[in-house]
Amino acid sequence: MQKKAKILIVDDDVDFIESTKIILESKPYEVIVAHEGDEGLRKAREESPDLILLDVIMPTKDGFTAAEQLKKEPELSKIPVLMLTAFSSKRSETSIPVSRGYTLDVEDYIEKPVSPEELLARIERYLGT
Amino acid sequence: MSNKPRIEELEAEHTPEEAALTMRLSVFVTLRWLAIIGVVVATLVASQVFNIDFPTRPVYIICPFVAIYNLVFFYQLRSLKREGPGLVIHKARRYGNIHIFLDLLTLTVILHFTGGIENPFVFFYVFHIILASIALHYRVVYVAATAALIMVAVLVSLEYTGAIPHVNLAGFAEPGLYKEGSYILAVLVALTAVLYGSAYMATAISGELRKRQRQVVQIREQLIEEKIGELEQASREVNKLEEEKSRFLQFLSIAAHDLKAPLTAIQGFLWVMLDGYAGEINDKQRHMLDRSTRRIKELLNLISDLLDIPRIETGQILPEIKEISLRQVFRNCLPEQRDLAKEKGIKLDVELPEALPKIRGSGPRLQQVITNLVDNAISYTSEGIVTLRVEEKDKHVQVEITDTGIGIPPEDLPQIFDDFFRASNVEARGTGLGLSITKRIVEAHGGKIWCESPCLDTNQGTRFTFTLPKGKNVRRGK
Image (cartoon, rainbow over all chains, first blue to last red; front, side, top):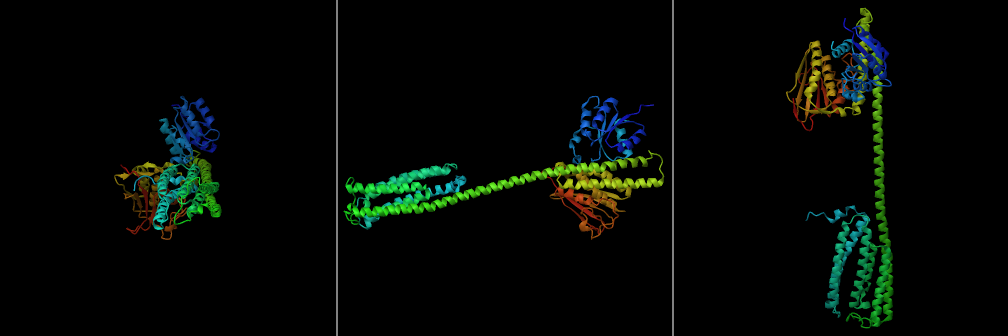
């Protein structure tokens, strides 16, 4: 049997993590969790996940800063990063308060809430499964 | 007329006091030309008409000298008018002092050759004093009056004692008059009274005038200072408003996030349950979960819409505005609309010209406008066609969305773009903010939007039309 892909969820919302974890584990993916940016970076280094779901607004270290750091480290920069945000990304570029996020070289932006099918489809696209 | 700048324009920077002073000195130069003519005419008339016998040649010789120094003054003044402000008063007064003493001397010399104390023109010194008090410092005026008196006194005593010859105005004055002590004294006393009296009166008036001129300048400066103060105050207030605006938008962003986050979490759980990840659910439960997700979607939309309004109204669209291709905007949103129409069994007819001018706008916002209007048209049409027609006009691009739907009741038409307004003939579905946001976006682009129902030409359905002004440098783009 093929090795399960490992997905790191970095989000401060435990409820969002719980529901997302259920969906991802059913695939099955292996899910590891971090609750803020620094923990996310540490887990990324330790566990070398195949994909990272990164929330934008978090306490201590926000998603943009964490993503910036991820993309700077050669070991981690190859891991696809999908940014999650409750801000509308469809409507306009500036509706995201930190517009520098758009110049960040992350793989994709996903607007919360995202349906299970949509989330899985996006993840599969970047895992190449 | 030459193209050279006129003196008046060059003087523009001078204060009223400076301008008045140089203007008065110019008047003096003019008066001096008249005085020269006056002396010549008076001499001619005296000798020819009144047959007063005296040697006229010295008088005629003096006149060119006066003319020469007057010419020098004339050029001095012209250079003075080009002088920058500040030094003008000082320089002009210095010139004026020289003028006045030269004039006093000239009059004394002329008097000497035209009868000395016998000549009633001895009282002409009063003009010098009046002119001096108009233009010069008041102390100079008293010095000039004193100088005039000394000059006359010296002239009279020299003639009296025979140190210099006396010229008698034969036929006008008694030949011995210049030696009559009481006459001389009377003339000198009268002259003293006249010169000092006029000096006192004239300096009082011109002093007052100068004070007023300075007050005018002071008041003007005060007003300018006040205006500058007001402007600074206004700019401080603008900065404060800008700060408040950005704080407000920051607040909205955080509010939006914190409002959406719990909804997002709930939505996540609902989807997990609906999709069976948390075990089987029965139809009744599915129905309730379905309704719940729909209500959450409504709430999320309402939050987005509510946040859109202040963002548009505080000009947050402006940084997004750039030169865009309208065709691209349509290309981005039409596939979704086509799917929606197909689902409902409605024909979506798109009349889009091959070439459309580029316009200045925010692509995502215009997509929002088109999506909203076409969505509405499809929603309120149960059968028939929704037509999207784009036309290039003289100064703008016009977009029409026409449906064959239920239409809008006439009494609702005036409020159709109001916040939270929902037409009375539809079941409440949206947030009631869609059209009001659409209107705000169109207007933020400098366009107009209006609605007709029923359509004037077909007498059915509804037509929304909006315009977008063409960019200044209109280029054709495919």
